[in-house]
Image (cartoon, rainbow, N blue to C red; front, side):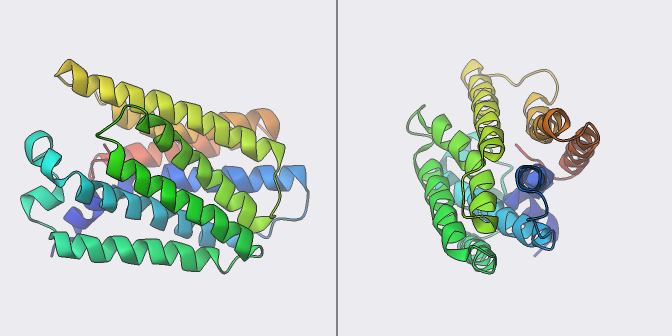
Length: 239
């Protein structure tokens, strides 16, 4: 089996936006409660949330298999480059990996409760997003819960600025999802890669918040990860 179809199935090119979400949550935690963050957890949580994201993308393609046959025939399951059985195994493995990694964190129980909420939200969205327009709210909630998982796993407490970051990504994801749905409703694609650029823009949103709240240099981190996302999208579609 070739590697590129697997990367496309997981929409791996979008992962830098998840990494920026995790980084933003940790920087804001450290800003609110100095010297409490152990940065060794950054790669652990980045990998955990990446696993949840990729698992959600695989589950999305499994749920959309019939729809993709008509509207997105290039998707790996439809082309047969990845079998349905393989996709099921990959999705289960990714979600289990995410839970195991969260279970290693300092506040494992709180983190796992948030991870269960994230998994449930992902599953609800994947199953129902083609059936109701209200599912865009669920999509926004899934992105916001990335921040909550990090917050709970590392502190077990609610911190204002992390929640504000989550709300901002919730609102941004709503706008992105609405624009994507409108593209489908109008029956023709936008001029230029509007959706991929908006996906990459998630990292910039975090960077702007960190620049305003913590230090301007963090905007550079957001821009860097947005550029990395766009670079990845040149080789693996993220929409």
